[in-house]
Amino acid sequence: MTTQARATRVRHKVLWLTVAAYMITYMDRVVISTAAPSIQQEFGFSLVTMGWIFASFQIAYALFQIPGGWLGDRFGPRRALTGIVIWWSSFTAATALTWSAASMIVCRFLFGAGEAGAFPIATRSLSRWMLPAERGWAQGVTHAGARLGGALTPVFVVFLIVHFGWRAPFFLFALVGIGWAAFWYWFYRDTPTEHRGVNAAEQTLIADALGDTSIKARGAVPWRTLLSNPQMWLLSAMYFCYAYSIGIFLTWFPKYLNDARDFSLVEMGIYASAPLMAGVVGDMAGGWVSDRLLERSGNLRSARRNVAMAGFILAAITIPLAVLATDPLVCVAWFCIAVFGLELTVGVSWAVTLDIGGSYAGSVSAVMNTFGNIGGALASVVTGYVVAHSGWNPAFFVLAILSALAALLFVRIDASMPLHRPAATA
Image 1 (cartoon, rainbow, N blue to C red):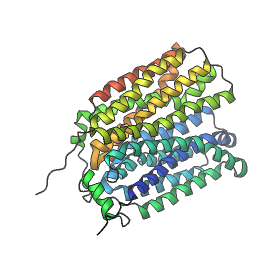
Image 2: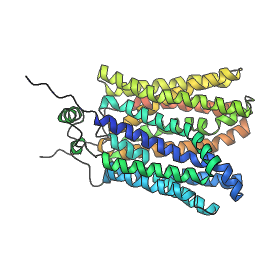
Image 3: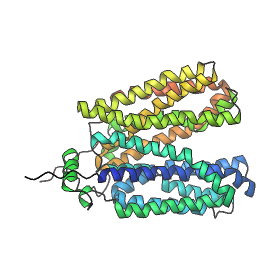
Image 4: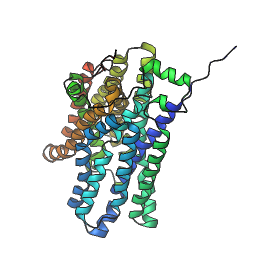
């Protein structure tokens, strides 16, 4: 009597290695924010100058989303992600060697150009590994890792600055990135069939769910097919609404608590982080719930749509309640629920790029994330004008409207309809 071998779980190791990459992206981003006071003190940079230094990253990050995703689809995630992590880690270290505002702006621009490909290529790296019933959880936990990395990093950066100066964390975090890249190239393979650690049972499990994963996508990305599909634009418009909304909580929310709710600086620091921590829970919960619904129903469209719509509707309802609350702590509590709702949608949105993108998930996610970054950038600028002319309440009511619009857009998003179907071979 023979017993069937239990399937290995190499795909889960791939997932956690990808989570580490997401954490590193946010770790490297926030280093300069924490080091900014020390940099200003040494070089005498004004706030306007520091603003341009910060903006240089954002501009490059938006511009190079699609080229970064293309790299992953064209050359495979193993080589592409290794290359861009080494690239941006090198410019993380180079930031410590800059000598002027211009040199720092150029350095941060090149850093952003490299990091722009991280999320699209990482998404592509999971497309041939994660089962459809695991994709929501996978995307949720990766983005939760990114948020958590960004939240915890300042503590370590401050310690390093106090003991070794502001340049030390740039060198240390660069080494972390290069170390990760070396391990990724050694461990990861573009398809499960290439990985020696994957046994026959796991190969069969993946093949039954995804089809033949041994065939690699090569050649030109079918941009005309992808961009002519209405699903691509519905997804991008939805993510614009999401990114504009969450962007306020990443930029203006502490200022709102200080100005509109009279929180002290200490209170502001504590309560401004509360919605983001609620968002970490939302990141993990949204993807997990979507996957469980898919397991039970087998209906991919409703499993993705229902969770995302629930999250956006929750945000649309609770944001006005937060704004109109008279008690500051009640206000923060409602905002925590709102951000939880917004982040419920993230794992689902990125899982949809895997569902409909297939071998071109890198390019699909890059288009979606480009629109998201445009939304986030506009949120920073537009909110300032709205608050200056009309106050804080209208600025947050805009988020409620965008959340409701995103819920409506998700009604038309069908995760079960691939954007591109490979031609059949004889």
